[in-house]
Image 1 (cartoon, rainbow, N blue to C red):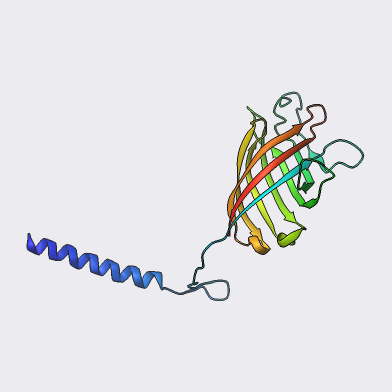
Image 2: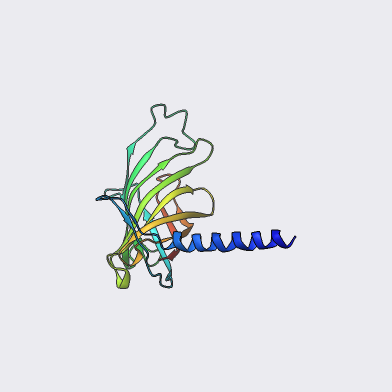
Length: 191
């Protein structure tokens, strides 16, 4: 029994020593890549609240359809296959004339056959205050007909470089005739 305990202790010491060396390992892949240790600092958590104005109607829409399904009758209820390019204003309040904070630029596509589910591929870029020149990116599903939905944040630039987090979206106003919408966002970023 004593011999077994000493073998277990020895194995733990060997594994501990190996783990220490592996953690401090510096890798070099020639001219195309290298890995190195970085001293980490405490993360910053940023919370943002703003409104997204998606306007499909009128003389100057902020979002336009760029592709549609071949058989429009088959996917009418979910718009499955439709792709829309957006350059939507982000404002401080639901009022479209309120202070412009930035723009959501990219595309969203109807990617679900059983519900109105949009694949969001948008960069939320800011032009005001301390976040001027910074952006974060959402890449994920937006179940648009749910009153509240959560979407993943997968990266960022500027102050939000290497950001991750989530966005909670809640429809503030929607016109079913035109598809125009105002959506409130509450965003939590870790960077």
